[in-house]
Image (cartoon, rainbow, N blue to C red; front, side, top):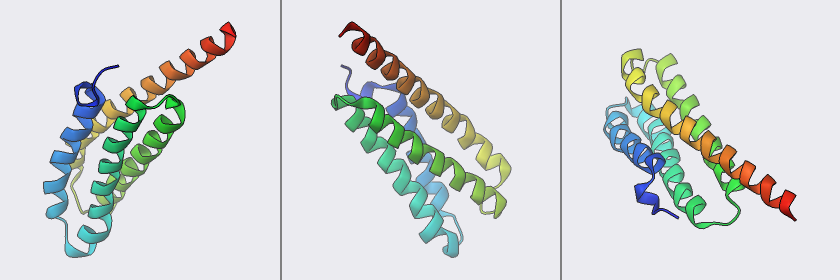
Length: 123
């Protein structure tokens, strides 16, 4: 098992957090403390879930929780664009990283589901 910090998913999520914090600090006050802090909180939750997945036996449920938080963060980014808190150009830079995170998380889930099925077939 690789260290969580060595996983590309962890590195991409950390990169997203490091870019998200300065972005949310520039939000108007009304959005900064609600929307912005929620986005940072979701990103932090995603990072902690990567640790949890990497050290747990039952990975699929934790990865599903990770993907739920990912989808919520993705939705909040869309709300930011629709409310004109960030520009579409700003969102485009984040969308590439978000897409990578989503693909890696989904792939990790599919891999573990297949592994679980093959273990059940052996029994």
